[in-house]
Image 1 (cartoon, rainbow, N blue to C red):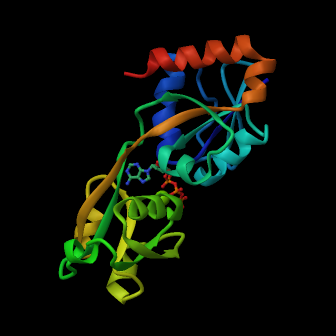
Image 2 (image 1 turned 90 degrees about the horizontal axis):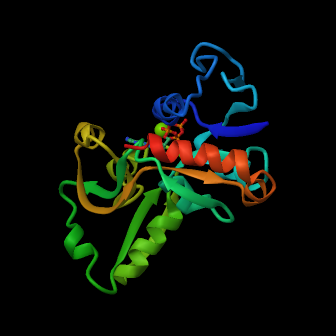
Length: 210
Ligand code: ATP
Ligand code: MG
């Protein structure tokens, strides 16, 4: 059995067409069913539904042979995974945003100090370290936009796609850190033990990526 870990929502929705192109139909809609293990038209392939941030954990520890996770998630928690393929889905960017009245340019001059709230502490730490800016990081798990508005932080590091959420909260995207997309990750031991079927599946994904 090959187990593929996916998260509900955009990762699942955007992976479906790739699976379909690989000749694999998922047998249930996770939004309608409460099942966490879903069969596919291939008797030897199943999908497990986990939180987006748990995908690397499942794959690294063998709870799944492979999985789809955003680069944002992998940079925070993706060690020990074989990362063969950019699926070019769930695309967005990792950016810094502040209130419109905050002088970001002045705040990031060498040697200064800035308070940043984010879910992506690893990525944020590396980004500001590379700029020579001292950063006080505040770890949040959601609703990051609120932090600059309430005075919790000067800036946030978050994912941006259309930018509508920022605009709705009177925030300005002041710097783009990197482009983000979802990657196919593979458990290295699975790849050794079941090279043939996994390689075939990875190749099918590769052909399906536009
Ligand atoms: P939850 O929303 O359940 O707390 P999550 O935010 O980790 O969990 P999703 O919102 O489904 O999960 O995001 C999954 C992945 O999709 C992210 O890790 C990222 O790679 C990508 N993603 C997140 N936000 C956006 C966005 N605004 N536009 C495009 N892709 C995004
Ligand atoms: Mg989300």
